[in-house]
Length: 179
Image (cartoon, rainbow, N blue to C red; front, side, top):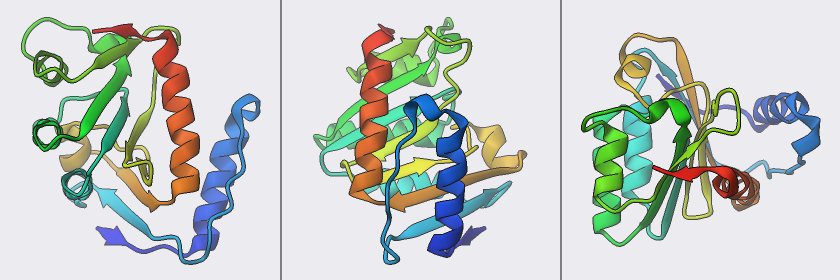
C-alpha cells in the first residue's frame, strides 16, 4: 500500500538512521515540499514503485543490494541501460553464486557489478536515480519481499539526500571487487 507521509515523520526516521552509525552520520535538511512516497508489503507495490522510478531515469542508477533476485527489477535496469542510462550495482559478497542469476545477467550485459566483501554483511537496500531520487528501506530486491514479507520502501526526491547516498555508494565501491 502506497502512502504519503508528513515530512516531520520522515525527518525522525532519517535521524534514527543517522544515529545508528555516528562515524558516518550526516545531516540533511529537507524542505516541507520534498516529495516522499511510502510503500508497504506484502503486496504493497514496492517492486512497481521501484520499476516506475527506474523507467524515469535519464542519466544514472546506482544500486546497493544485500539480496538481488528480482526479475522485474533487473529487467528494468537492463532497459535503462539500453536507453543509455549508466547503471552500476554493488551487492553483498554472498551474491557470488553459480548460474545465470540476476546479478550474473546484469554483469554479462555489461553493467558493472561489484561485490562488497569488506563487511560481515553489505546489508544495504538502496537505489539512487539521477543524483536526485533515493529509494531505501527494509525491502530486499526479491520476490519474497514483495509477496510474503512485511517490508517498507521510501522513495525520496532530494538532491541533497541523493548526494550523501552517492558518496556512500562510492566509498563502498572503492573496496568492492568486480563480479
